[in-house]
Image (cartoon, rainbow, N blue to C red; front, side, top):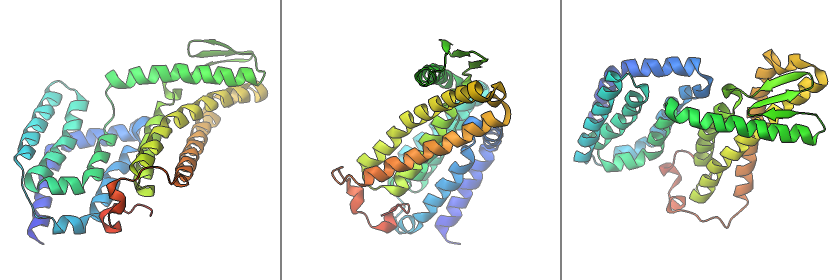
Length: 291
Protein backbone atom coordinates (compact mmCIF):
# COMPACT_ATOMS: atom_id res chain seq x y z
CA UNK A 1 0.00 0.00 0.00
CA UNK A 2 1.47 3.39 -0.99
CA UNK A 3 1.78 6.33 1.34
CA UNK A 4 -1.16 8.29 -0.17
CA UNK A 5 -3.54 5.33 0.16
CA UNK A 6 -2.46 4.79 3.77
CA UNK A 7 -3.03 8.47 4.56
CA UNK A 8 -6.48 8.33 2.95
CA UNK A 9 -7.44 5.28 5.01
CA UNK A 10 -6.27 6.91 8.26
CA UNK A 11 -8.26 10.08 7.49
CA UNK A 12 -11.33 8.03 6.53
CA UNK A 13 -11.12 6.01 9.75
CA UNK A 14 -10.75 9.15 11.88
CA UNK A 15 -13.70 10.94 10.25
CA UNK A 16 -15.87 7.81 10.43
CA UNK A 17 -15.09 7.35 14.13
CA UNK A 18 -15.79 11.00 14.96
CA UNK A 19 -19.03 11.10 12.96
CA UNK A 20 -20.31 7.59 13.68
CA UNK A 21 -23.42 8.89 15.48
CA UNK A 22 -24.09 11.43 12.73
CA UNK A 23 -23.79 8.77 10.04
CA UNK A 24 -26.10 6.38 11.90
CA UNK A 25 -28.73 9.12 12.33
CA UNK A 26 -28.51 9.90 8.62
CA UNK A 27 -29.04 6.25 7.71
CA UNK A 28 -32.06 6.03 10.03
CA UNK A 29 -33.64 9.10 8.45
CA UNK A 30 -32.94 7.89 4.91
CA UNK A 31 -34.68 4.63 5.79
CA UNK A 32 -37.71 6.26 7.45
CA UNK A 33 -38.17 9.52 5.51
CA UNK A 34 -39.16 9.08 1.86
CA UNK A 35 -38.16 12.68 1.18
CA UNK A 36 -34.51 11.68 1.58
CA UNK A 37 -34.39 8.01 0.63
CA UNK A 38 -32.08 9.00 -2.23
CA UNK A 39 -29.41 9.64 0.42
CA UNK A 40 -28.44 5.96 0.24
CA UNK A 41 -27.13 6.51 -3.29
CA UNK A 42 -25.16 9.71 -2.72
CA UNK A 43 -22.09 8.32 -0.95
CA UNK A 44 -21.63 5.34 -3.34
CA UNK A 45 -22.04 7.69 -6.30
CA UNK A 46 -19.53 10.18 -4.88
CA UNK A 47 -17.06 7.35 -4.20
CA UNK A 48 -17.49 6.04 -7.74
CA UNK A 49 -16.85 9.47 -9.27
CA UNK A 50 -13.80 9.90 -7.05
CA UNK A 51 -12.52 6.47 -8.10
CA UNK A 52 -12.92 7.45 -11.75
CA UNK A 53 -10.46 10.28 -11.11
CA UNK A 54 -7.85 8.12 -9.37
CA UNK A 55 -5.26 8.60 -12.15
CA UNK A 56 -5.54 12.37 -11.92
CA UNK A 57 -5.25 12.22 -8.14
CA UNK A 58 -2.26 9.90 -8.33
CA UNK A 59 -0.42 12.27 -10.68
CA UNK A 60 -1.23 15.40 -8.67
CA UNK A 61 1.53 16.38 -6.25
CA UNK A 62 0.27 16.91 -2.66
CA UNK A 63 0.29 20.60 -1.71
CA UNK A 64 -1.13 20.84 1.84
CA UNK A 65 -2.93 24.12 2.38
CA UNK A 66 -3.45 25.94 5.68
CA UNK A 67 -7.01 26.89 4.68
CA UNK A 68 -7.87 23.23 5.11
CA UNK A 69 -6.95 23.39 8.80
CA UNK A 70 -9.19 26.43 9.21
CA UNK A 71 -12.05 24.53 7.57
CA UNK A 72 -11.41 21.51 9.83
CA UNK A 73 -11.56 23.71 12.94
CA UNK A 74 -14.74 25.35 11.64
CA UNK A 75 -16.23 21.88 11.05
CA UNK A 76 -15.40 20.86 14.60
CA UNK A 77 -17.11 24.03 15.84
CA UNK A 78 -20.25 23.19 13.81
CA UNK A 79 -20.12 19.61 15.07
CA UNK A 80 -19.86 20.72 18.71
CA UNK A 81 -22.58 23.35 18.30
CA UNK A 82 -24.91 20.88 16.60
CA UNK A 83 -24.27 18.22 19.25
CA UNK A 84 -24.77 20.56 22.21
CA UNK A 85 -27.84 22.24 20.71
CA UNK A 86 -29.29 18.94 19.40
CA UNK A 87 -29.39 20.52 15.95
CA UNK A 88 -28.92 17.65 13.52
CA UNK A 89 -28.42 19.82 10.45
CA UNK A 90 -25.33 21.56 11.86
CA UNK A 91 -23.62 18.35 12.92
CA UNK A 92 -24.50 16.68 9.61
CA UNK A 93 -23.34 19.50 7.37
CA UNK A 94 -20.12 19.66 9.37
CA UNK A 95 -19.38 16.17 8.07
CA UNK A 96 -19.31 17.56 4.53
CA UNK A 97 -17.09 20.51 5.42
CA UNK A 98 -14.83 18.20 7.41
CA UNK A 99 -14.26 15.99 4.37
CA UNK A 100 -13.46 19.01 2.18
CA UNK A 101 -11.20 20.52 4.82
CA UNK A 102 -9.31 17.27 5.35
CA UNK A 103 -8.63 16.86 1.63
CA UNK A 104 -7.52 20.49 1.36
CA UNK A 105 -5.25 20.30 4.41
CA UNK A 106 -3.65 16.92 3.64
CA UNK A 107 -3.48 16.95 -0.19
CA UNK A 108 -4.16 20.51 -1.33
CA UNK A 109 -6.32 22.58 -3.71
CA UNK A 110 -5.55 20.49 -6.81
CA UNK A 111 -7.09 17.41 -5.23
CA UNK A 112 -10.14 19.41 -4.14
CA UNK A 113 -10.52 20.70 -7.70
CA UNK A 114 -10.30 17.20 -9.18
CA UNK A 115 -12.88 15.98 -6.65
CA UNK A 116 -15.18 19.00 -7.02
CA UNK A 117 -18.17 17.10 -8.39
CA UNK A 118 -18.14 14.18 -5.91
CA UNK A 119 -17.72 16.65 -3.05
CA UNK A 120 -20.58 18.79 -4.39
CA UNK A 121 -22.84 15.73 -4.27
CA UNK A 122 -22.39 15.22 -0.53
CA UNK A 123 -24.68 18.07 0.67
CA UNK A 124 -27.55 16.38 -1.21
CA UNK A 125 -27.56 13.58 1.37
CA UNK A 126 -28.18 16.00 4.27
CA UNK A 127 -31.90 16.55 5.06
CA UNK A 128 -32.95 20.18 5.14
CA UNK A 129 -33.80 21.66 8.55
CA UNK A 130 -37.47 22.22 9.30
CA UNK A 131 -36.82 25.98 9.19
CA UNK A 132 -36.10 25.61 5.46
CA UNK A 133 -38.21 22.55 4.62
CA UNK A 134 -41.58 23.81 5.89
CA UNK A 135 -41.58 27.20 4.07
CA UNK A 136 -40.92 25.28 0.84
CA UNK A 137 -43.47 22.50 1.42
CA UNK A 138 -46.51 24.68 2.17
CA UNK A 139 -46.34 26.87 -0.97
CA UNK A 140 -45.89 23.69 -3.00
CA UNK A 141 -49.08 22.31 -1.43
CA UNK A 142 -50.96 25.43 -2.56
CA UNK A 143 -49.48 25.30 -6.07
CA UNK A 144 -50.38 21.62 -6.44
CA UNK A 145 -53.96 22.21 -5.25
CA UNK A 146 -54.43 25.25 -7.53
CA UNK A 147 -53.10 23.50 -10.62
CA UNK A 148 -55.05 20.35 -9.76
CA UNK A 149 -58.22 22.43 -9.45
CA UNK A 150 -57.53 24.08 -12.82
CA UNK A 151 -57.04 20.75 -14.59
CA UNK A 152 -60.13 19.15 -13.05
CA UNK A 153 -62.30 22.20 -13.75
CA UNK A 154 -61.08 22.24 -17.33
CA UNK A 155 -62.15 18.60 -17.65
CA UNK A 156 -65.65 19.46 -16.44
CA UNK A 157 -65.39 18.04 -12.92
CA UNK A 158 -67.05 20.31 -10.33
CA UNK A 159 -64.47 21.18 -7.68
CA UNK A 160 -64.19 23.80 -4.96
CA UNK A 161 -60.81 24.68 -3.52
CA UNK A 162 -60.24 26.11 -0.06
CA UNK A 163 -56.54 26.53 0.53
CA UNK A 164 -55.03 23.12 -0.03
CA UNK A 165 -58.36 21.27 0.30
CA UNK A 166 -60.30 20.24 -2.81
CA UNK A 167 -64.04 19.56 -2.45
CA UNK A 168 -65.42 17.14 -5.06
CA UNK A 169 -69.03 15.85 -5.17
CA UNK A 170 -68.10 12.48 -3.66
CA UNK A 171 -64.87 13.13 -1.75
CA UNK A 172 -62.73 15.77 -0.06
CA UNK A 173 -59.08 15.73 -1.06
CA UNK A 174 -56.50 17.39 1.19
CA UNK A 175 -53.14 18.06 -0.43
CA UNK A 176 -51.00 17.17 2.58
CA UNK A 177 -47.29 17.86 3.01
CA UNK A 178 -46.50 14.36 1.73
CA UNK A 179 -48.43 15.22 -1.45
CA UNK A 180 -46.91 18.69 -1.85
CA UNK A 181 -44.38 17.38 -4.34
CA UNK A 182 -41.34 18.32 -2.30
CA UNK A 183 -40.36 14.65 -2.10
CA UNK A 184 -40.26 14.29 -5.89
CA UNK A 185 -38.74 17.76 -6.20
CA UNK A 186 -35.76 16.94 -3.99
CA UNK A 187 -35.22 13.56 -5.62
CA UNK A 188 -35.64 14.93 -9.15
CA UNK A 189 -33.17 17.77 -8.54
CA UNK A 190 -30.65 15.19 -7.33
CA UNK A 191 -31.21 13.05 -10.43
CA UNK A 192 -31.02 16.16 -12.64
CA UNK A 193 -27.60 17.06 -11.22
CA UNK A 194 -26.31 13.55 -11.84
CA UNK A 195 -27.87 13.35 -15.32
CA UNK A 196 -26.51 16.76 -16.29
CA UNK A 197 -22.99 15.84 -15.25
CA UNK A 198 -22.89 12.44 -16.91
CA UNK A 199 -24.79 13.34 -20.07
CA UNK A 200 -23.59 16.87 -20.84
CA UNK A 201 -20.29 18.72 -20.99
CA UNK A 202 -21.72 22.16 -21.78
CA UNK A 203 -22.19 24.17 -18.56
CA UNK A 204 -25.22 26.02 -19.97
CA UNK A 205 -26.94 22.75 -20.87
CA UNK A 206 -26.14 21.30 -17.45
CA UNK A 207 -27.65 24.34 -15.75
CA UNK A 208 -30.80 24.16 -17.89
CA UNK A 209 -31.29 20.47 -17.08
CA UNK A 210 -31.07 21.15 -13.34
CA UNK A 211 -33.33 24.22 -13.53
CA UNK A 212 -35.91 22.36 -15.64
CA UNK A 213 -36.30 19.74 -12.91
CA UNK A 214 -38.20 22.26 -10.75
CA UNK A 215 -41.14 23.02 -13.08
CA UNK A 216 -41.21 19.38 -14.25
CA UNK A 217 -41.58 18.16 -10.66
CA UNK A 218 -44.24 20.76 -9.85
CA UNK A 219 -46.30 20.03 -12.97
CA UNK A 220 -46.00 16.28 -12.50
CA UNK A 221 -47.27 16.52 -8.93
CA UNK A 222 -50.14 18.80 -9.98
CA UNK A 223 -51.24 16.20 -12.53
CA UNK A 224 -51.00 13.55 -9.81
CA UNK A 225 -53.42 15.57 -7.69
CA UNK A 226 -55.70 16.04 -10.68
CA UNK A 227 -55.41 12.34 -11.56
CA UNK A 228 -56.44 11.41 -8.03
CA UNK A 229 -59.48 13.65 -8.44
CA UNK A 230 -60.34 12.07 -11.80
CA UNK A 231 -60.05 8.54 -10.42
CA UNK A 232 -62.13 9.39 -7.35
CA UNK A 233 -64.83 11.08 -9.41
CA UNK A 234 -65.08 8.40 -12.09
CA UNK A 235 -64.30 5.18 -10.22
CA UNK A 236 -64.94 5.90 -6.55
CA UNK A 237 -63.19 7.40 -3.51
CA UNK A 238 -61.25 4.20 -2.74
CA UNK A 239 -58.78 5.07 -5.51
CA UNK A 240 -57.71 8.17 -3.58
CA UNK A 241 -56.01 6.12 -0.87
CA UNK A 242 -54.05 2.96 -0.18
CA UNK A 243 -52.13 1.13 -2.90
CA UNK A 244 -53.48 3.18 -5.80
CA UNK A 245 -52.46 6.46 -4.18
CA UNK A 246 -48.94 5.24 -3.45
CA UNK A 247 -48.54 3.71 -6.90
CA UNK A 248 -49.59 6.96 -8.55
CA UNK A 249 -46.73 8.70 -6.75
CA UNK A 250 -44.17 6.28 -8.20
CA UNK A 251 -45.76 6.45 -11.64
CA UNK A 252 -45.73 10.25 -11.70
CA UNK A 253 -42.09 10.32 -10.60
CA UNK A 254 -41.15 7.98 -13.47
CA UNK A 255 -43.01 10.27 -15.87
CA UNK A 256 -41.22 13.30 -14.40
CA UNK A 257 -37.84 11.63 -14.85
CA UNK A 258 -38.79 10.77 -18.43
CA UNK A 259 -39.56 14.46 -18.95
CA UNK A 260 -36.13 15.31 -17.55
CA UNK A 261 -34.44 12.90 -19.98
CA UNK A 262 -36.51 14.32 -22.84
CA UNK A 263 -35.33 17.81 -21.88
CA UNK A 264 -31.72 16.64 -21.92
CA UNK A 265 -32.19 15.07 -25.33
CA UNK A 266 -33.69 18.27 -26.71
CA UNK A 267 -30.81 20.32 -25.35
CA UNK A 268 -28.33 18.03 -27.11
CA UNK A 269 -29.90 19.16 -30.38
CA UNK A 270 -29.12 22.82 -29.65
CA UNK A 271 -25.50 23.36 -30.72
CA UNK A 272 -25.69 27.10 -30.06
CA UNK A 273 -25.41 26.63 -26.28
CA UNK A 274 -22.01 27.92 -25.11
CA UNK A 275 -19.40 25.35 -24.22
CA UNK A 276 -17.17 25.77 -21.21
CA UNK A 277 -13.46 25.05 -21.11
CA UNK A 278 -14.11 21.61 -19.64
CA UNK A 279 -15.52 20.48 -22.98
CA UNK A 280 -11.95 20.42 -24.22
CA UNK A 281 -10.81 18.17 -21.38
CA UNK A 282 -9.77 14.62 -22.20
CA UNK A 283 -12.37 11.99 -21.41
CA UNK A 284 -10.18 10.56 -18.65
CA UNK A 285 -10.45 13.83 -16.73
CA UNK A 286 -14.21 13.68 -16.40
CA UNK A 287 -16.43 11.44 -14.32
CA UNK A 288 -17.40 9.28 -17.29
CA UNK A 289 -19.80 11.74 -18.99
CA UNK A 290 -21.46 10.75 -22.21
CA UNK A 291 -19.49 12.28 -25.12
